[in-house]
Picture 1 (cartoon, rainbow, N blue to C red):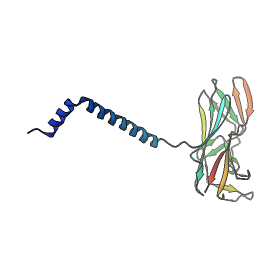
Picture 2 (cartoon, rainbow, N blue to C red):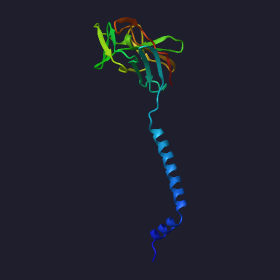
Picture 3 (cartoon, rainbow, N blue to C red):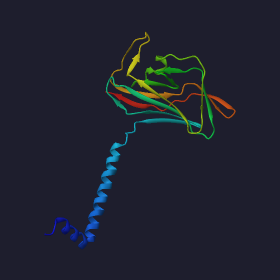
Picture 4 (cartoon, rainbow, N blue to C red):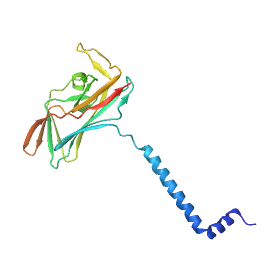
Length: 197
């Protein structure tokens, strides 16, 4: 009695071109399926706004642009040395927050371009000089939460209404030293538009 495997082996030896074609099609289909699956696993890149003023690049990134009312908004600000020389940075004060140094600032404005929030106005600074050195390609990063709140002049705060808002990152005033040259700079990113639904 001839087994199924024996007949299959005989068929394979008798039809090498068909076997090669089937294997080739299966390999191609598997490759396409694997590529599609891996594309789905990639993190979805959110919006990014960057200003470049050699030797530095200042960027703001967010995970997305649409948020439900009350949802935490995460804002990532970074300053990178894109030059070939080591740079020195000097702030006259800084903002400690949750055991981190927050180097930068951000502003939220509403549809009428009225400022509704500024991070440094809601948090106290330490009046002490902060100095950092960045080698080529090194960067400073601060990650900020915004809980969709805005402050009143009397110290109270409230939930922002649904609508369109504009987010802008700021370096604050910082002394920049490259070699023996020192200048004071303030950079602002272009705005990122977000929607609170």
